Image (tube, rainbow, N blue to C red):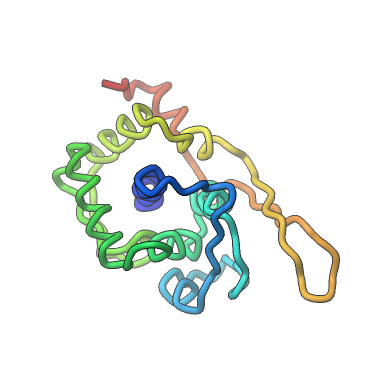
Length: 173
C-alpha cells in the first residue's frame, strides 16, 4: 500500500518537474538501507539506479530501500511523506496515515476501503503502476566490482496484483 502511494507521488513529481524516469539516476545511500531495513533485501549501497528501476524494485519485489531512495531524491523526505498524505486525501483515503514510504515501520495505517480508493486512483491514473505490479519478475542491470555487467533478477513479492483487484470488482470512477 505504501509503495503504491509512493509510486503515485514519484510519478506526480516527475511530471511536475519534467523528469525522465528512464534517464534520471538515484544512488542508494546508507540512510536508505537504515530506513528501509529488512533481512531479505540486498540492494548495494552507493549504486545508482534509474527512477524506473527503483520503481520496479519497489513495486515488483517490494524493496524497501528503493522506496526510501525514491522518497528523498528531489525533495526532503519529510515533504515527500507530507505529499503522500496529501495524495491519499485527494484519492478519498480518509482513514489512512503515512509516516514513511516503505511501510517497514508499523506507524503507517490504512483500511480496506482506502485500499480500494487507492486502487481506483491508480487504475484511473496515466501512470503504468498497474502494469508494473503485474510483472512476475524484473531484471535490473548492475555491475559488481571487478566483474562484467550482470543482471539482477527480482521475482515478484506481490500476492495480489491490481489486475486481480480490478477483476474482482474495483471499477474505475
